[in-house]
Image (cartoon, rainbow, N blue to C red; front, side, top):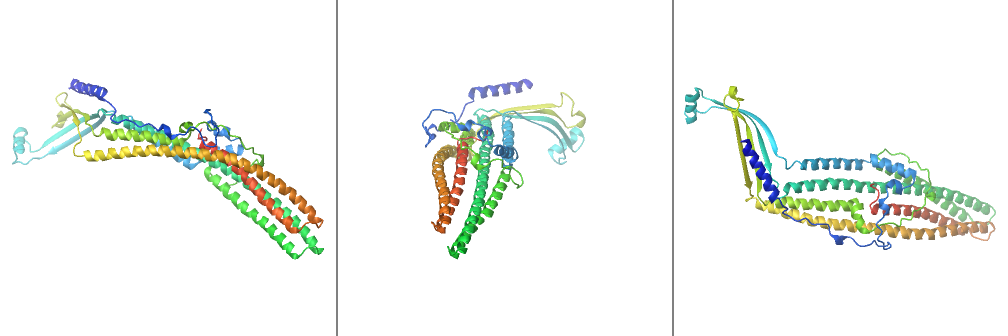
Length: 472
């Protein structure tokens, strides 16, 4: 019997080797989904990109590196993504065993009492002198399906693609968290700078109010001048608690990203001391497939869809299954393990072709095909979004730099205007409204300048993220 089992297994393996073929053709990612160059970027064939830099080399501020380090280790969303990778890895490991024969061990004992008036009961009484019969069995059952049509192969391919996809999901999440932490820190520095501007402006307003009061006492201005000056001073004073509130909220947001309870965040640098990088190296759009985790994930989703089409298509064809059973059997417990008299064994092999459930299989296949078409569209959309985000970041970097240059000139002009207005006002050659107007304009311009600097730093960070940087 062992020789018979061996022959059947060898024949099945031979059939699998000779007949095994792919019943469906995979669809590749569309090559025309990517443009040749990014908008707002100089035409270049250089494939190097700032996204190739590790985030520890892209960000040079120690405070930011410390915060990102904490976020990468302690962020709860990233930890969940890591657990999802573990789950996907278990599934992939399990898929490797799909073409291994299943072996089950079993032990059964039964007794039956046929009717004395039945044929079995009368013969039982004559043969054994008893009205019941026992049966004791211990054996192993083997079942194996030959992967003729590549169904099990596609299951492994799909599970492996899903495992890789879970890794890309984590990478994409990390790029977002790294960018959010850095932009949050830049926003914190901007709020610090604006708070300092508000406090300095409040001192300037207070000084102006004192001068106006002296002129009022001298009969040179009316009480209206004092009221307007006091109102402007209160406007500057109101900014201080508002900015302090926003600072606390931003610190709390960074605490959530770094997986810690709300607390203050260390700042050893000022916004004005950070240099805006000139990030000219953006590479070419085709590199986004390998650099951007979300685009890579969409590409892997197409591979999963290809595997599902192959699995559902294989269900149309006959399945070759081989089963074998062997062990010991006896109707008397004393003879149960008497070898070889109690040995038994069966071997069977057959092809199973679905008939009545063909409609259900056809529906599953059609759905898998449509899902694959969706995967292609999703890939195109992911590329479209990625390229658009890079283009947005490039134009933001360029135009914010131009805006900052104009704003710096305006601030310098207003600073000189305040000096002149104060001098003229003291000598009675200018109205107090001119002084108050110049101070209000300077306050607004300095606040805008701090915001522009923050926007420039954030735009550089966004360009880094859009190109696929931050997960290495």
